[in-house]
Length: 418
Ligand code: AMP
Image (cartoon, rainbow, N blue to C red; front, side):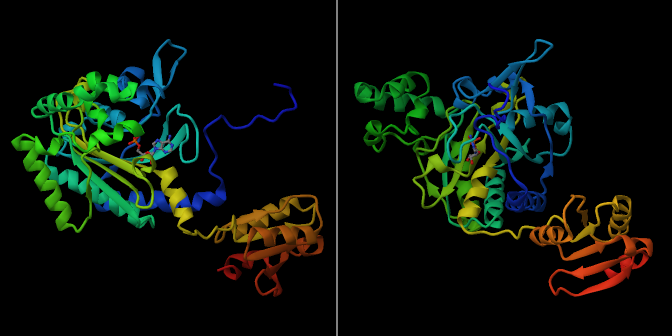
């Protein structure tokens, strides 16, 4: 690269600029508020984990197989930037002894995730998620609670036009027999399937149901549905989750094709997406029960249920819905000194900061130019400081909305700015 070329951001990542942060803050604060209302406490886990922990999520998932940001550190450890939060949160739950506390542990996390995906609109290599996990509880009421929490967050962020899809994928008692039926149904159709789906038929037949290839779509309608083949426990949970959602007046769409193709996922799966969109491609968030995950990580078998929502998509939808966040001015007061009055200006600013946010214009430009800049920043007051005034320890306080101006002693600044 020639020396003169400025170095740009890495492909697939982006900056969130100060004017955009307001919208993000609304979504993040809504997340924290809603989580707290439901009794979920914040947890922060590292962005890096052992690659193996992530790989236990399942080496055939896209997030792990194709999209992992893996690297070797100076100590020769094989690490990865986390592609999702649940693996790390479950690890922290055991390592931090949260499994010894009253169960379930209700936890939430907001932070960046990394996937080496093909960048496009709404899809980034570093993106942000709001995660909610209830670990150590098997009650289907927790599934409904997590869904209700997720929905409350989306509503509080101003997104009301969302559809919720719901399904149950059974557990290791009933799923194997169902997968047998699914294979039986698809085998005679094998030659007509897309090559990827031919492979799925043998390796991971559940994934045939969420295949997006057009040529395979017509076969889905006739496929057996797992919710017709649940064992008694899974059936009871399935009934309970829906009853609780009904009682909470939460509308959902039963989607027999909504699946997760990994063994540690059990029972409830759900997804939220904009009603106007074509569905799963544009999900703003989703989740489900993962009763087999703790064991897959090498810990004692422990049930859990969670949700992951994408802040990038949520803020994009908020902006598209015309949600406006008043851009806060950087400061309420601008001190505009003559060029040589650096120390005096800093002192005036310090006094005014007792009450107000204050910036100082140290740039070598005319008072007129400083006034224009202060106006653009949206400050409420300007404090004009000339040499004669500085000697008498006074300044000119100008109200930027009315244009009124009056002399004020430095010592009186806190009262005058109150
Ligand atoms: P997942 O962990 O794949 O279920 O994703 C949960 C949510 O995270 C999705 O519904 C998206 O809103 C968001 N998300 C996932 N991958 C990306 C990405 N590459 N860029 C932006 N948002 C993403």
